[in-house]
Length: 121
Image (cartoon, rainbow, N blue to C red; front, side, top):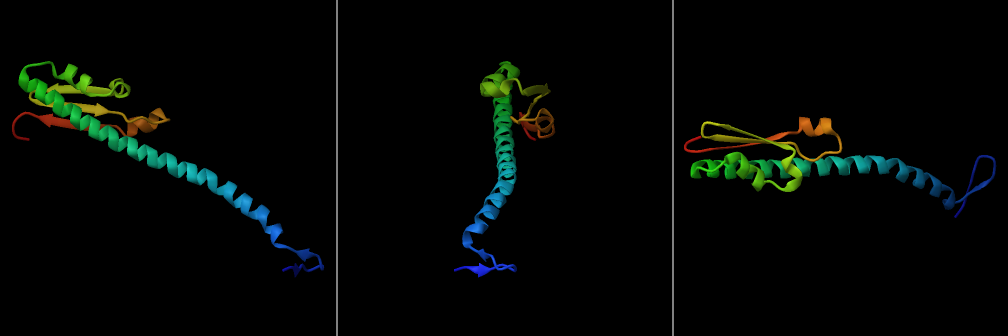
C-alpha cells in the first residue's frame, strides 16, 4: 500500500508516525494544564467544606462557653491551620481558608469563607 510522491518516491504509512509523535508531544502540556486546573478546583471545594465545618465547630464552642478560635484550629487538619484565619464577631464565627496551590497568588485569590452564627441567620 504505497503511493507515489510528486517526484516518484514511494510514501509509506510509516512516514506518518513522526507526525503523530509530534502531535502527542504538543498535547501533553495542554493535558497537564487541564489536570492542574481540575486539581485546583477540587482543592477549592475541599477547602470550602473544611471552612464551613470549622466555622460550625467554632459556633458550637461559642455556644458552650469554650474558646471558638481554639476549637476552629482543632477542627482543621494540620496542613490547613497555617492557611486559616478566624474572626469572632458577636455570635458569628467566620473562617477564611486559602486552598493549597502551587502559586501563592492563586491561593490568595481563591480564598474561601465559612460562616456560622448562633440563633437566626
